[in-house]
Image (cartoon, rainbow, N blue to C red; front, side):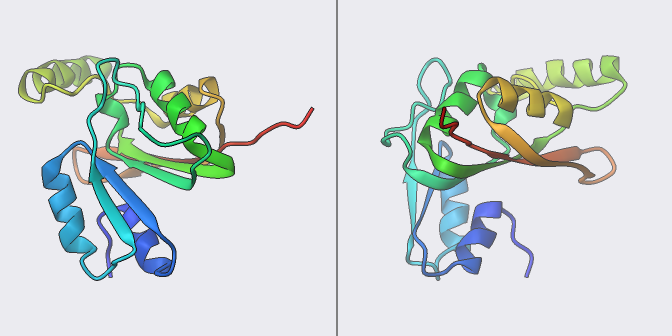
Length: 170
């Protein structure tokens, strides 16, 4: 069975573990509710992103062992602050899995695409390459342990990475 979201695959792989799925989009939550209707241990919650576009989620620090972010980073105005907030929510040794679409070459054509996309989709800020996403994670205090770029179709490319929150004991 093909899963549309990493969180869906995780919910099905570990059916006895609890899960929380948050999104700003009511439509995405409705799709998640349909996809996970047979997973009663998964809780769905709509959130608002604050004005600074950081996560600022209402959960205490070190709440989660795993956080997945799918197609989010390109909409965030301050990605380092956002990723730092994700790190704050991770328990020591926790993992952050991020997936998003990738910026393409040639740079001029992609810049024109982003300009047009900003007029159509108000939230689009900037797409990142895998190398740029790695650098953002590092700046946010996360340790990237795996990353992969991949084709989606003839136009779109994507990337995914896994970063760990490692607490140093010095």
